[in-house]
Image 1 (cartoon, rainbow, N blue to C red):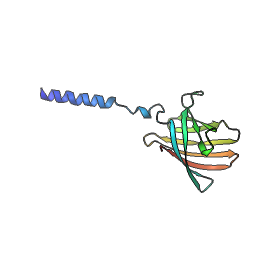
Image 2: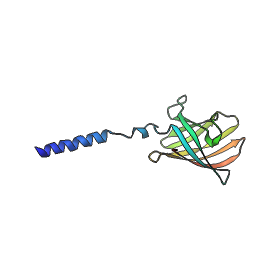
Image 3: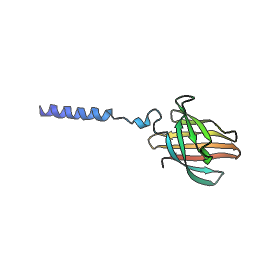
Image 4: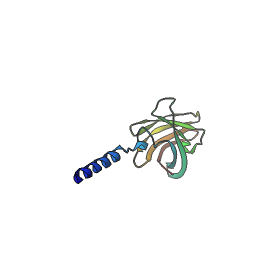
Length: 134
């Protein structure tokens, strides 16, 4: 009888632990919020600044808006789409800056590796950046 009780206790513990999920990593959770951007730009320059990512459901559920990408300020919105773990820059709300590029989201490490180019009022054909949590 004691072994049955131990087996039931073990089974109950397993069921409870397996019921706990990683909700913050599912369906894009964990993407929105403030990120620190560590950016290599204009060849050899480096800078670190904060930016913000929010959902942009006006297009679809896989679209996000990044505020302050390339340290352009909160008024410049960059729209990106997430497919699996790859972000693709769609466009911006600015007539002065054009951004193209891609990023790879590392869910469990909570980082996003980016490569993009910026043109318009500035010309920076290759920017690499890592977003992580501040």
